[in-house]
Image (cartoon, rainbow, N blue to C red):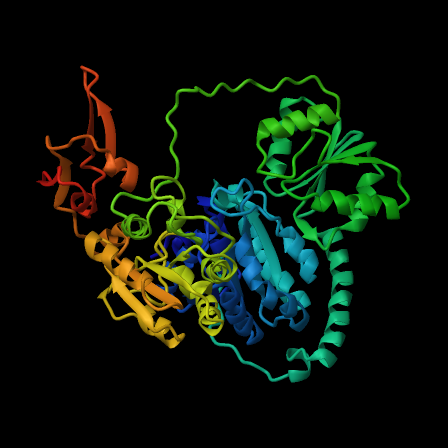
Length: 619
């Protein structure tokens, strides 16, 4: 049985923040969960998936975040406790539904997890989703560690039901992916079937209804401000005339800094866990007890701006700073040294940050597709067909974005999930170069279909390559509607990509196996020379990591570079598989070799170089 189901109340476990969120939801009696996977939130959905296999809880990997939110909202309106989790940019996709859901409200407790990604470890931007709580007018909680992630998740369900609103649980990468000791509570029996009570004059927000619901939402916010002032997640610590206000993971850095700077008897710390609605009375009281305040928060000056407004409206003249003046930046995540330096500067303390020397000769490790990844073969074939600089390549979000760097160099433009298809249409109408867009199978289902329909409707002219590796690979090999390989063995896809593409009105559709290099190059050349319009190449070959995990098959054949190698370097300069290494022997003679521990046996390199031959892998 899943460890989050077996752990007893009162026991302690070392949990990721994401695991703690799942446990907190179970302790709150959750019965319905949805997600679209995205780092740093993916482990939430993955754990719920495994738990749903052992319990009567319902869980789904939805095709995108908007669908996930809408599905969970309906379950909540039926009285079930639900959670919808996503990474920060996913909330952009779901925001259309979120804004109106705040008006319509919920019946069963509903928690929306937004996992923000300061420093963009795995994201295309680092937006601050705390602004969504204010934008939508819903309460927000921000845990600082795994223990708070559990407790706040549990409390969020109660808060949601008290006010009939979804609650935003806003985390960051360091909370999601750090482990700390958590004391567990009691698991609750979940209600698995709900009842929907028809109430169209409150649940169907036509303008007449929406006007009234907006006023009701504002009234709820007034009441929740009182809730925020007395919330146990908002508390003052310490004594002294210097003030620090902080939230989330930054609280840990501040606590370390206070101890290491030896200023515990000089600093009062206001730790905010319920950050929206803003606890105005609590903060005004805090402002009156200190001489100046440093606000320590990652990304936007969310707390800082509201604190300044609170001081101004309260008639208190006080120095409040956070961002700017070489204190704290509006970009990237913080670290202990950065926070200590900012506090020392603001409070005029003597502190010299330690010098960190990074060796200049360390080898670079640029992002790269795995050895044997079929996307590499797809990119190689397209580049061979169109030639150097022969096309514009709009790309998309997924493993295949790693085709950005040379030698593949097959990503010229990227905005968000599904944007490759839509932007390809724009490029095709705005300039004369050929356009080849790349989108993954999961991303195509997520938000590529609408762009394809638009392209057909508006007579756009480009080639769309759908990179179908049979899974949502980058975020952890989660399923999508077109998956064929499953734990139960090969199965027909529930939604066939080729049939879907044809159903969108595309007549020129071909399916290739990119590991058959010459055939793929020839097919791409043939389709690019076809009639103008939208043309689709479905490049179909499973992710080797996923395939090995599902089938259990081990690669029996690897490849080697023989003495026939003339150092033409095509394997390095055109393919760039990480299994290849450029070496020098003791006589400083250069040669190219294949690391048999990395080689997947895909045979793509053998098809482009006569000097590469199979070698039986030793047992």
